[in-house]
Image (cartoon, rainbow, N blue to C red; front, side, top):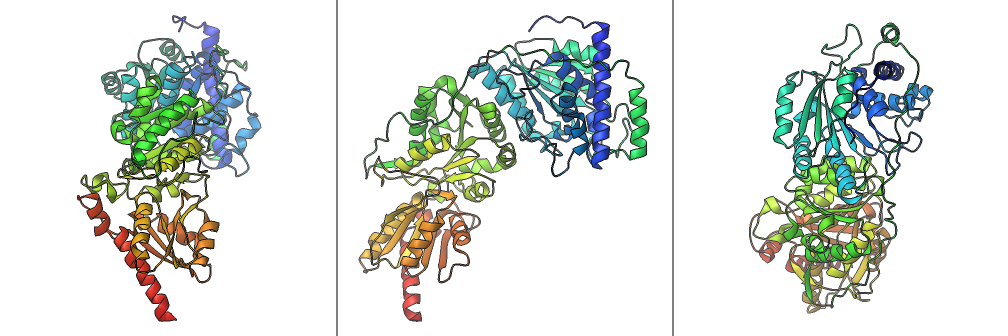
Length: 627
């Protein structure tokens, strides 16, 4: 970046005038809406003015241009000032601002990607900086382009641990193309923020995380211009001392005004007062970007060759995931892998070994890992696969939920699911993950049962929009599918079938193999079962399940290495509810488990071959007694 040149007085005055116009637009929009956060907007007016009309380089009419500088509004409740910026720049009509928060307007209460100028949804505080880190990492290491990433945070959200996970990440990777701006306006929602205006403490914290930290008067356009003009070989934090409600007489720096629009009469008076300070109506235009971001194509990514497994040989699906991901990395140089210091357990280390420059170690910070993946995937720059133990995604559920609202295309792989992991005990066992990911809108939940299915799931996920979750297991189980087997989302496989089948058993992962073993036991007693592998738990193949259930006198048994709530059993029950003559018996983990050998735990919780065989016999004898 060039050395700082002090702007002339005319430019400085134009930036002040722009800031005041942004204040007026934010007040008008929130008063018209009857809701919103005008005081949070007003504290950031000079920051937004300098950023968008002096510092950032972007094409106004092409907000998602690959070479544009990026901006993330982490304090998403200040959305009206972001909308006001894009109206000031000429991308939005000024009149549209008055439709803020209306059901037929794109200008929602918090930023969402249906707005062309918004890359990630924000509003659940503490997540914007993680996404910005992902964008900056992509810009520096994958795109190797000159665009920079700016993230505006409120001081209230600095209490969120996820912010400091992101600070640590950016400091470690020396993301010198990243600038975080702390809008330290002193007041939170219900109370002052813990540090209030002790900006020097924020500065020390940022420096401890490896950032260059500058304290500025956040209402001085000249100080902001100078701070944004400093280039360092580390990320920059601009700690801006501001006042909440700046410019609103009687409200500025006062408590109890958070999230409250100004009443109409008051708004008119305040707007007039602010308007009187404006010296010139001339509008500023941003500088254009250097167009050096490469053209990227991530469509239709195909494995370079079919799977090479032998039926009957034993493979853990977690290892097959690593093999598949490394293979997919040869198909497209925009496939990237992230992990949270579990790469030797999830087997993402196989990807790292073959594609070291495209692997991101996120360390033990799962919330930030998901946010980094979201940031990396914005503007279709990468195909991101992030992995850890399935159970550790539960701590990142808010990031996953917001990723769905962000319309993000990220792929998450959770290994070590269920009691079958064995001796490590319940803290390491993913037993809630199916429930969690099934609740995420537009998510696809893969649960492959062998190495071939796992490789196909990885390939399909790379080409599927929305959040994809792949659930993998620790035990080694036999390969059951031929390498040329075709797999599709929402299409189950009937893996065992005869005309004499009396019960349909649905399992996935380790429990599918237990169901096949149970079929062997039952055959000795002349009892035959049909076994179904759902492949995807969401969407579920309702048609195949119903067809086979009807062929087996309506009897379904589900068996899963997961708690009862929200897993395969509930997915199947929801699919067949209201269908006459269908009964579902669910075998699942019914209480908090313990350490033990895998086989012992499957037996203890009634999801092994013997428990399945017993449940089948019980279903058959009940039916015979009823007859």
